[in-house]
Length: 458
Image (tube, rainbow, N blue to C red; front, side, top):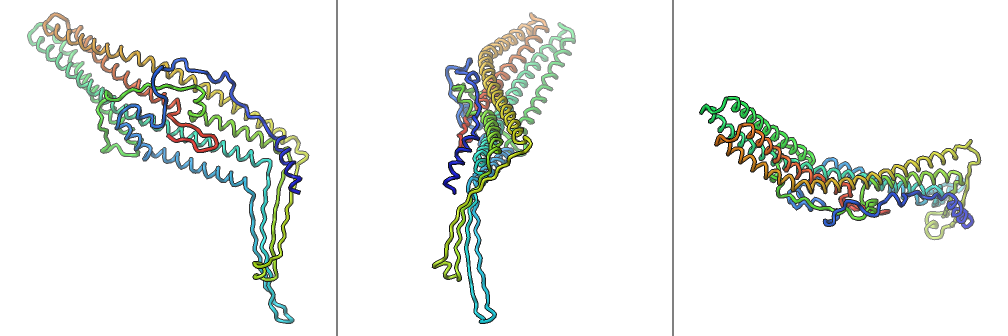
């Protein structure tokens, strides 16, 4: 019977096959328009490219102690258990029975025994189980990609939080230097007021400028504390007693990143792998909807061993083997199965559209980020030169004012220009660092999906 059923199973399974939709060639560019000529592609351990030992130490601690990452790991473990259960459903269900009977003949008072052992294997839903397993595999791949995406975002956030602490310390140092400059001008103004060469208005205005710089220092100190608290939380620690040893962004290198070939993004960016897995799950649901039109095939194999005594059951039992196959099919359902097929096909088309949208958005996102990094790189030299010019301009204005050649308004303008130029240079450095971290994230951070296997971690 089973020999006759197996070819029928193969034929019916072929009838239920549904082609998997995919991306069109125009969805994937051949190359990036704004890719740099030098640099290294993103790999696992991308944070080491910044050449800062403390950053590497912080990332390692985040991976070990971050509370959200621990939850992500548990969720992925639960998804693995679900996939394992789905895999077990591909195996026939066994059943074993053992029976022993003891009786006494009332006429002869003789005792009689009999025993039997039976085993049964049942394998049902033959045509639908492969599609169900493929759906479970797709759901697991989506969960693995979601976990990788969460880990990538948390590590990127930790790097940016570390940079934020250091930029605040740089800004505090610049603000304190600005405060000292303002105090020096205040002393010059006051000396000229005392000498009667200028009116007290200039002294009052400079006092306001001094207090403004003093308030700026206080605000930056508070911002640095808040940045440290955010970083401490990512490390699963309290901000009380938490600190980092670095005091400036100056020693942190801004790495150059090569994005690689665009097609590689499909397996390296977690959100794209997740969108593709959702499409595969929708495709499996279409196959299941089509399989509902086919008979429900169940194969059964059973064996039985029996004897008049327990000893004979072990030594020389009477054995019986049997196989059977059954087919059940629903003839009419008022069109319910047809509606389910159509509903599943609509869902698959929506999943395909979502996948294409995610792919196009990812490619566009990287093009924008590459151009933004190129723009920030070009602005770095300008910001550095502007800072140098502002420092020289303030030095000349201060000297000329002390000699009574320049007016106070010239000093005030050059003072404000220096404040702005110093902050602009520091903000450019922070923007370049954060843009690089964001590009690493957009490129997948060295993560790579392994179809049908275990994906490489971060």
